[in-house]
Length: 328
Image (tube, rainbow, N blue to C red; front, side, top):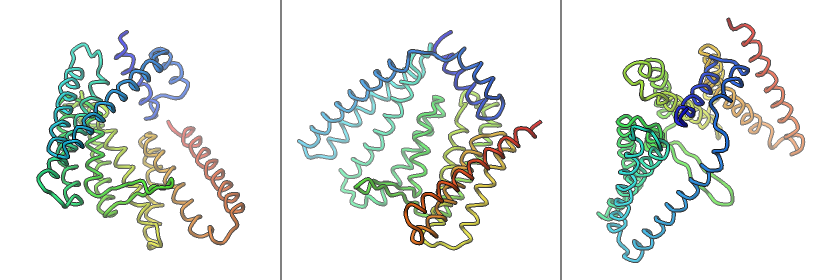
């Protein structure tokens, strides 16, 4: 059996288990038939070497651009690198024998990331000075290009990049603040929640209709829409409950978490259940932190928090077992 066939069967078996189509014992029986052993270290070394080579190449290009002190030259050099990555990536991804499909998808995705860098450098070379307004537009343009590439060559990695650029382009930002601190921000949480909900519905329709019909070769695309939608929906609702926001949003966030657990049980989809449990727990911890951080000592605070977390986990496990026993 070819390695690509083994990889496909392994992913399918895991997906069946996550969707509730097979139980754990059947998963343990099927996986050893298709899993390949001894390839992890070789793959890790290969990708470390590729990453090192790529970083060294970018360092040389950055040095040349710094010496010339020209954004135009930097854009030209990066465009040449991106074009090379695109050419070789497409060749590998569309190889009829599928000898290096994963490598090809990664190279195509890297070329699309380079395309964003080229657009930004060209904007700077043209004298653009309003980067705050230009970067979101460039992200959306690059995301559109990545999405078209994903559907043209049936590659999930470019679609992953497209969704990242899309959600960041419409107002989701994060940054490193120094001293181990990170900052996350969504420009308009209400708008983001609506867009994320639309992405969830699109993912379900894509997965349950299109991928068993005209877009059979795009298997897995719907799952990406669904996961990104669930992530940004919950993040948006969570941010709307922070810093003394109205109680209404706390109730909406709580209802949304419970609704995801119910939908996951109804559809036998662990993705809904997982996001619902995680963000419901985050919601409870956030409320606990807001009301008791300044009223309790540090030891008592974490003791009570740990006890509540254990009780919540026990309740979820009990509910899951009950739902499994009642399932026809």
